[in-house]
Image (tube, rainbow, N blue to C red; front, side):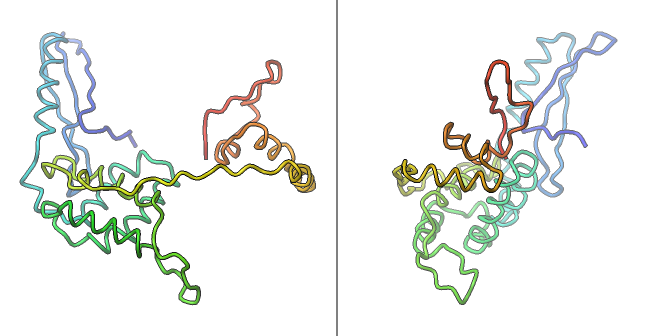
Length: 243
């Protein structure tokens, strides 16, 4: 299966007969989720570049005919499938799907996309801070019913990416977000480092935990390490991925 192109992505090639062709992704069909590929032709590469530039600008203009056909629910699910699914890491996709199913759809899902207002989204954010946490277990009482500032910001990032070419201005952009909380870094006290490493050694994890303590690697970076990332001769470790 070929890699999906982003809107406006293009390529140019020259045919054997001397003509030049420019191929670009015009848009995604919201009904099927499939990309619409179009092309332009020219006698020179410069001519095709100019035609491509104009064609891409034209393809990215507002499509008002479709703005009233989607609810927030239908478009956010389409967005997740077409835009997020092929590009995001697995954990990020799961987070976004949780935000969509547990928060966005229950509160905003039934609203027509072209009727969604900044006030509605602002009220949604305010409610998330007060009562946004999902009650998963009835026998366990929630100590804090509100979602964290970080989660509210993440949901805003998701909404801010929606509605491309369907509405003139994304109403999420006018919302006031709570300030991010600065947490003081917690450092393991010196007297606890030795017992910590002794316990790690008993479990055969001394190397990993010692590396974590001495380098500050994130958990995902630590878990993604392979032997080929270690250069024994130069005594260096390459960090190039995360899980």
